[in-house]
Length: 115
Length: 112
Image 1 (cartoon, rainbow over the protein chains, first blue to last red):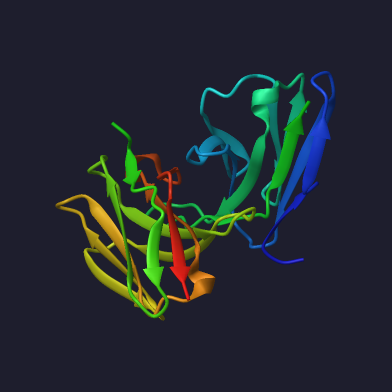
Image 2 (cartoon, rainbow over the protein chains, first blue to last red):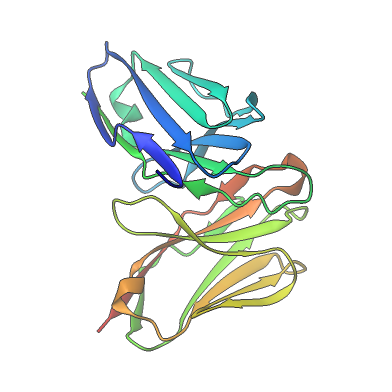
């Protein structure tokens, strides 16, 4: 596996379900991100983990719960979602550190549909 | 006021012509700037990054940065139908380190 991988690629869930999205990066990076992309809206940053510590939480509802067990893996735990949470969820990674370009590389995304 | 602004398009370009995309940003402390290409149903793919004023060329792509005027542009030379996609401008807010703010994207259509 190379780059950034995400599973599952497609997910359909009911509002009472609990599911998790998984992201893995094979680039040796030390920062990972969750983004949400809804139709006709810009990419929205949800969470940032740098060196396995959460450094950004953009007022995301508590029904989204991130987990970063190590610098290569990132999870997004989902529970009691709403239909408006249906979107493409993208994971990205970058090499952090002062002065760097912080180029972010994206995984293929998980297309989530909440019924 | 949006932090990163792009014309949503579509920008219609004949095959072989130059496509010119613009992006303006509001945060003067921004340090790094990126262009991503996103095909329909796919994830964004990084195509250019720039952090110094002036031009940066990579193949058929040229990124231009003007920090005084707070804009960054992307030129696509010899446009091909395979260049038809949405192009996202992203800006790194320097003080926030690794946070990127994205524009809404410009949809480009290259017509044979």
